[in-house]
Image (cartoon, rainbow, N blue to C red; front, side, top):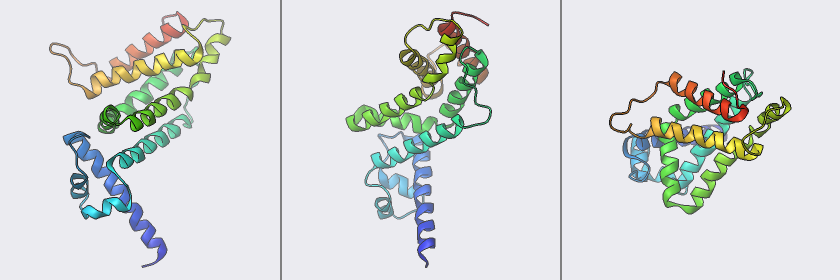
Length: 206
């Protein structure tokens, strides 16, 4: 076996473990998942896990890095809009985050569960959110350049946006809906968030 084929096999096993973890987290939750559950799901020997990750938390950190890389790819997309004085730009970001959250719901739940019981990981997860928000702070320069007044300094205003979308996504994409409530469709959620954020940033409706 060549060195290259060993690296490829190791990469394949690591990817299999991460995908298996996401499936098990979706069924059992992060806190109820054992490492042996993950290796069994991946059809790998139990000891193979430790060739790639020192702990379940380290695997979750790898998944978090994957999410960050995915977010960077979205930001680099050709259709990326950055002028937040234009509701279309806000809608673009709302749609990207909503779809991202929905497609990675099991991992997002696992991240939250880990943050509740591991202070070190809680700081890591918080740093992920801070970095995501910081990446779009400059988009608000267009709002002030248009002569409009933000509700707070740009760094705070963008955190308000991030927390609103994140909390709304958690409410409808992770948690069961409250008794008697009807969950919004994806389009209804994106439209409501876009209108709310645009009005908050600019004082305007559209």
